[in-house]
Figure 1: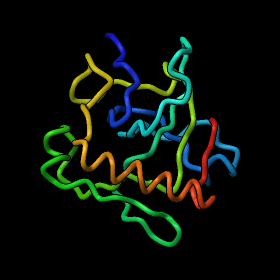
Figure 2 (figure 1 turned 90 degrees about the vertical axis):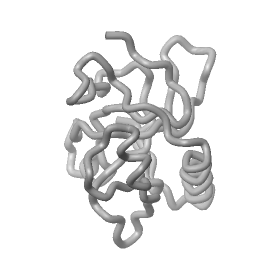
Figure 3 (figure 1 turned 180 degrees about the vertical axis):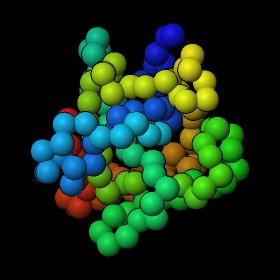
Figure 4 (figure 1 turned 90 degrees about the horizontal axis):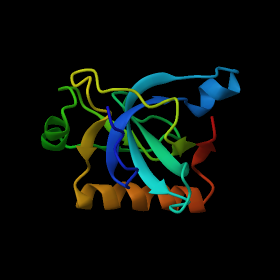
Length: 141
């Protein structure tokens, strides 16, 4: 089963480790949809990538998220529940990595597809704004 190329906007299955989980000494998180927001070293064999989690939990407190429109979620093959891309925290990891997992309904693939360009630009812009203001938590599992 070939891995997709790491391209910004890719939605894939990943063992995301939340910042608070890492603080409690957990070493792995939970397989979930995630969005690749940036690649950091395109010339390397194992690229560093920035990964944002996708969750059903509505953002609260200092957590900031962008809701995925239902039509986009359906096209990607996500479930019916409301879903957010969290832009106030990220994992930085190598691609490929051990956290990649096959999509449950499609065991032969790791990716759900790509965010539409307009939605991806909103996600990327909001993450970069928070990161620049040092209000985004970044974890290297």
